[in-house]
Image 1: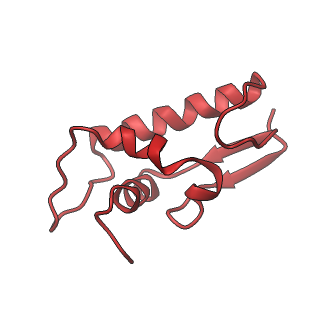
Image 2: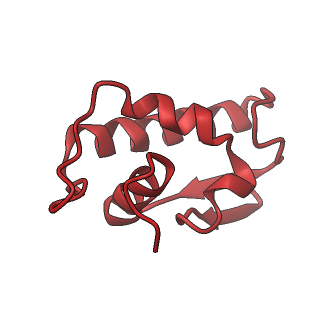
Image 3: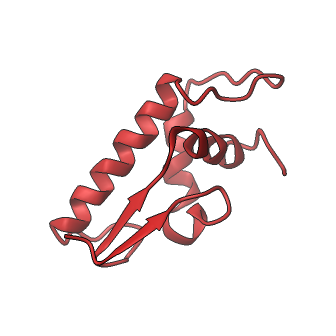
Length: 93
């Protein structure tokens, strides 16, 4: 079980994960500049599944980009959409 919980945001995701790894989840995704990425979109679900897999890897002590031990990463669908928009270069705020 994780000793520490980290809530991922667009401000801190780069502290734990390589942008390129997250950006690969956006391959083939078209983002409407006026709409952004909806929190209920397939790419957000894919990101959250990817994050769950990273949490499982940390429990198995597999090293990955984060290099954090005993950490559980949590993220809401809304924040996941913002992370993907920022990493994909669709937002600058």
